[in-house]
Amino acid sequence: MSLMASKRARRRLTKGFVYVFLVTASAVVIFPYLWMALTSFKPIEEFFTYPLQWFSKNWTLAQYAGVLEDPKFLACLGNSLLVSSIVTAISLVLSIPAAYGLTRLRAPGGKSILVGILSSQFFPPMIFFVPFYIILSKFKLLNTIPGLVFAYLSVTLPICTWMVATTFRNIPRELEEAARVDGCGDIKTIFEVVLRMSLPGILTAGLFAFVLAWQEYIFALLYTTTTAAQTAPVLLFYYLGQHQIDYGRLMAAAILLSLPVIFPFAFMQRYFRQGRGEGSIKG
Amino acid sequence: MLKGRTRFIKGYLFAAPLLVVLAVAVLFPAFYNLAIAFYNFIPASNAWQFAGLENFAKLWNSPLFWNSFKVTLLWVAGNVSLQLIIGLAIALGLNSIIRFRGPFSGILLIPWISSFVVVGILFIWIYDPQMGVLNDILLSLGLIEKPVAWLASPQLAQLSLIVANTWKFFPLVMITLLAGLQDVSTELLEATQVDGANWLGTFRMVIFPTILPSISTGVLLSTIWAYNSFTLPIVMTGGGPLRATEIFGLHIFKLAFDAFDFGAAAAASLVLFTQILIVIILYLKLAERN
Image (cartoon, rainbow over all chains, first blue to last red):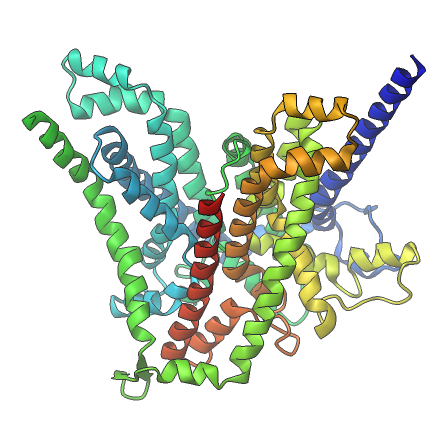
């Protein structure tokens, strides 16, 4: 009896240890963002006090006002929004019919084509540095939104197609057959059965494409040098390059840039938690 | 029969627009890059000249290339091992609890969805020698005596970058292993516990063999992403100090857009790509054997 009790006590102790460990890990994960938020509300004088003041006594929105009044930042934010929206729209328009054709219409070799498309996800972005630069400059697309869209599609299309195809594969074939028996054509079947059934999956793929484009940095850095098409992440990098780094402003800008990702994240984490590592962000 | 065939053709027709765009935006540039590696670009006359293996020979004789080769190997080894250890520990923790598993995994996935630029900026700010919070904490705990220049010292910069990159990437290993842990048989677990095996024994005899495929998948993914890194190092150190953090991505970037040596940059990117392919082939060989 006492052996049982001690065993139970030991198990409870292990459980407690696991929870302490997970709480610590979560704290380490949250801390940088918390610190960023605390910094962004601090008046500039408090940056140089010693010892460091964790909580400001004079909360201020001045850093945010400074960022939002910067026409350059607003222009870049606009560019980010425009590029991400166009990339998302094109990615979905191309990947939905393709995924349908390759999975539901049983195109021979559909599976291997899909695996081939997905594997291009793992290509190092560096193999595109030079060829994209030459192609974009040849077509006078450097420093333009269409140029960025072209480069971004190479990132979003493979993963979008894979995600949509995965959702389509889970729809019972009988439903589709039933629609066909009822006299629905291809287009009508797609809209009335397949799309309706796989809406959450398609939404996830679209959000994913948007977030990928919103956070993309490498190609934006390489192919935009003027504010004509520069995106917000690149502008942050330039804020950083100034001799005296204005951390308050930088943190406020970083928060503003991270906010739009919160909603899609809440949606997407369900997808990730199924253990799907293929949806990854290049960097 | 005829109906079946029209369906085949229709399947391809539906996929055609995507395949065309992918051919133009992915396949063509990849092959174009392959060709560029064997040519020299002469900016003065804006012309290309066939160079054979000259670009590769140039890399072979360049100390900067070998420096970046070495830095990249260290970077990959450091990131992969740290991510595996942390990812495994957290996956085991999450798997052993039922209450709050959802909220915990939600929080622990945050770094994965964070943007690289924002993560880079966060860590520059945390590592800042004067105003950074890391030095502040360590000083007040008495662990260091004077502020440490985390990113400005050639000895520490690589390690500081690896820690930041691991913060960003461990969730990938975590979710991969967590998925693998679902396959561990509860009967087998209970049987070993009845036999009186301790935790380490259970892990070695039951858990580890079951999740071995997930571990190798996790190692493969984190190896690939470590090789493909670019944003975090360029934002945080730009390859410095003294090229101590100049991994392949940054070296290729500098060859292409500082030196405008397109041929050498393309050749170096092929060397990088080859290393990734070797890792993938090793992985497939291993998976085949099991």
